[in-house]
Length: 188
Image 1: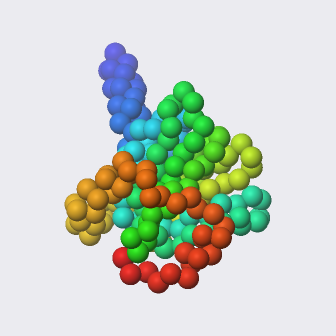
Image 2 (image 1 turned 90 degrees about the horizontal axis):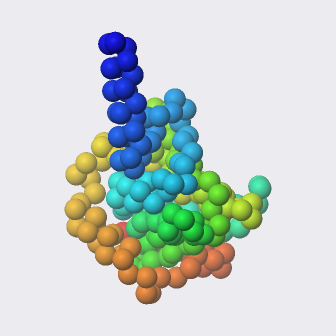
């Protein structure tokens, strides 16, 4: 009887972690560093991921096989969001530097992978598309979000929420724009 209660508790606890959408809760279900996020969890997971990593410095690259199609380095994460769960036709990555914001749409995403090292530090995300491209978000420094408490201010969090809600003025990430961005000094 006691083992049945323990099993029910563990199942309830796992369900609660899964339903929370928190990156740690999702990662707790896996022994390996990388975790594939189920499509039905993309919206909640990406919302939580965005809140946890807003303002972190990251590079975004788009690759097909071994070819890098575009890359933007050392920009602040503004947010990552998915369209409606039923449609799943786009994921948007918003980054910024020097007051300029870029939004990169990932069309027809097929897989979202939360990247962690074996110690649990967050490294970023990989988003695989149906056309064979992989869009990677990699943080400059892999870290656990709780180790940065107080390092990133609440005003940055509020500003990031506002930036995600505004779609005007955002530029799409293109190879030409990416090369231009790499030459801009990092003053944020």
